[in-house]
Image (cartoon, rainbow, N blue to C red; front, side):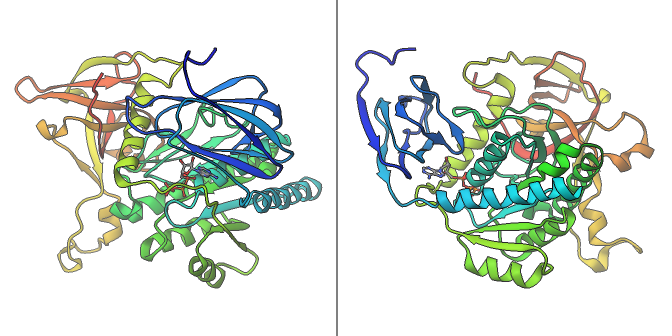
Length: 430
Ligand code: ATP
C-alpha cells in the first residue's frame, strides 16, 4: 500500500503529550491524506496506531494524532491544515477515564453497576470525540461499555434521524470508527429533537429500559456502564431533554464540555449524587458549517446502502405495492389545547401514528422498517417503541399503478410491512 507516486511527504517529530492536527479538504475531488507512524507510539482519538501501516483519511476528515511518549509520523498528500499543538486537554480526558475505571473496579468488587456517563455541551465542542476516546480506553482495559447515541443530527452508529445503542467490544478503527454490529436502533424521523421532543424523550426512556434490562442479565455490560452522546441543543426543551436523559438512565457522571452555564444549571437541577464535571474542549475541534453537517448526514445514508471504502454493498431496487405496506408518520401537527378532543393531551398528538397516503411527495424520503409485528390496529400501539430493522429510500412513486420503487439493503420482500417516514431525504446519485 505504497502512497501514490509523487505525493508530497512531510515528516513530523512530535514531543510527548503533543498532537498533530490535520484536515483533509472536503469535496469529492479532494485528495486523500495518508498517515504513517515511523517511530514511537501514537493514537487517534483513543485508538493506537500500528507502526509502518498507512492509514488513509478521506475528504472532510479532521484528525488529531496524539502521543503520550513522543513519536514521528509521515503525512502523504496535501492536508488543508496541518500543525502541531502542545496545548491539549488529553491529560484531563485520561484522568476522567481513570476515574471511571476506578468506578468500574469498585462496581466489580461490590457487585454494583458501573458508571453511566452523559456527555453534554453545545455544538462543535468534541462530544462525539470524547465519547469515542472514553469508550476506546475502556475497551482497551478489557471493559465492555455501551455507546448510547442520542445525537439525531450526527449519529455515529446509524443513519441520521435515529437514536441507538451499541455494545463496544473493540477500540474504534482508526479510519472507520466503531464497528457497528447489531445496534439497537429506534426511529425518530428528523435531525433535531425539537421537531418532536415528546417522542425524543420517549425513545430515550426506551433505550434506558433496554440497557437496564441487559445490565441485569449481563454482568460485563453492567460493570462497563455506558457513555451517552447527546445533541448540541442545550437550552429550553433541549436542556429538559438532558435532564430527562440523566434521570431515565440514572446517570452517575455528567461531563460538560466547555459550557459553564450548562454546568451550573445541571449541578443545580440534578440530584446531588450525580457528579457533574466541567471539562475544556480541545482547541483542535473544528466547527462544522450547516452544509458540512448536511454532507456528513448524506454520506452516512450512502454508507448504509453502499458500504464504506473497502466494503462495498450492493443494494437492491424493487417495487412495493401501496396495498402491501402501511406507512405512518409519528406525531400529528400540534393543535391548540382548546381544539383537542376531550380527554386528549398534546402528548398524545406527538406520539400519535398518522397514516400517510403514498403520493409523489414521498419520493426520496428515508423510511424506517419497523420491527413491530405486522398486524391490525391492535399492534399499532407498540410501533413507536419498537426498534427498527432497517431502512429503505423511496426512489419513485407511481400513483396510477399504486406502486413505489425503493432502494433496499436486502432483496424483496420487505421483512416487515410497517414503515415510518422520516423528514430526511436521500437522493441516490449512483
Ligand atoms: P456535534 O455538534 O455534531 O455534536 P461534537 O461536539 O460531537 O459535534 P465532534 O464530532 O466530536 O464534535 O468533533 C467535531 C470535529 O472535530 C470532528 O470532525 C472531529 O474529528 C474533529 N476533532 C475533534 N477533536 C479534534 C482534535 N483534537 N484535533 C483535530 N480535530 C478534532
